[in-house]
Length: 554
Image (cartoon, rainbow, N blue to C red; front, side, top):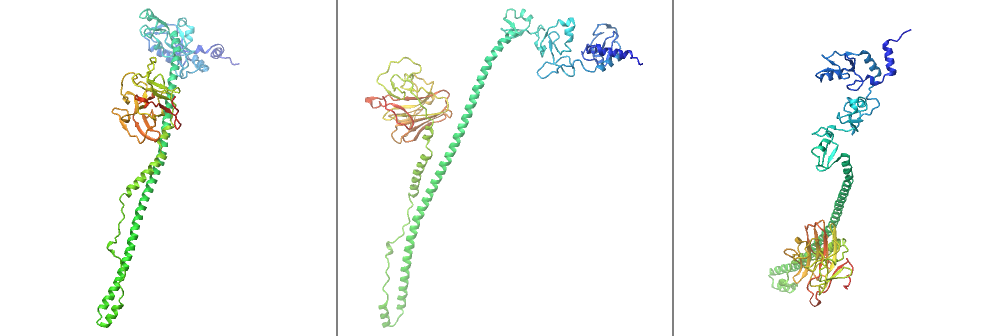
């Protein structure tokens, strides 16, 4: 019967009682690779012990610290090599997770990096479960401070004292170690990092809320801009369609005018040609008759027989009837003024078509807003109706309490409503008044001191007085009225910087201020005029609804 050799018995024994730790290199803590034995009997990976001694000035065993005078000859441990080969698997890889993105890797692992389970603040290294084992077994290493895995441990050390940064100085807003606290920051308020962390974490909520609010504000602004672009596109499409319709109509009118002009001229020419042809036909007939008589006369003149001559002369036909052509003439038709009359007709027709197809006032009236006069802004001489729609000049200034919103130099009044974007339109009745002013003004206008009512000072207004109708500027712009002005429409496009005024009854554009720059709220503004002698300017200014009868002032 075969008896097992001592090697087989040893391997069998190792199989049953040894753990894989018995086959690990104490330098790399991994399973022995090409194991060699030192004279003192300890085993290492050939590469590990060779590199270890290459970096040392003296040769000693990493386990028992036995010092060798000369570098020992390393011998292959055949038995151990076979046993390691039998066990085969790596201790550090077995049942341990590999490091993933965002996790701290083990600083000792070679090849496949494993996830660190602890970091040593003394060694300044992070270890997986296998490489952490010496810190759990060796008494000296057990004294090291282990913490949850941290990356970049070197950045967590005080550059001055080489100690862990565990504290926070509130005065200088820096991270310090215990030595710093006892020296440079001795009299500063210093707190643990955890405490400052909690404070800052609490602040994060407020910061996040502010950031979210800013995000929402910007999203709203993005929506406003997109809405503006969409409105602009819709307006552009509408203008293009209206323009095409108008131009098509205009071209049709012009073509008809041209055809009518040509037809009229050709008709006159044809009439002249017919008259001339009739006259020529008549003349040619007379010429033929006269030619025949001339032939008879010539033939008779050659007769020598006296009797025959006299007999033939008696039978000579009477002269043909002819017209006195000295007063007859063909007058060419006169075309003077024909083209101008045609143009006048064309202008009238185009005017009708333009008014029908392109009523600008009708377009802006769709932006009507309901505004009410604000008594807190009214000059003490002004009297407002209860509904806030009418204002006229009183004879005695009311005793009103001071209000920074109130006009005290000029008799203006603003509306309660203001506008900071988009378009708006309102109408004001100015019937039976000899002086008035109205328009829009920005919020920051000077309400106490004397000032010019110009766009530079924040006013965009037109007014009527003894010098007629004008837009207030420097200098003022005189405006032409086609008829008595009874109602004025005011249209503002805040974003486009446009203020336009209209004669509502005549449906005529009066004036537009373009290229305006608006950066603050705009208010409709009214002034019923100072002249109220014997009631001749007592009629109120009335904010009127579009296309509705204005109410009587009470």
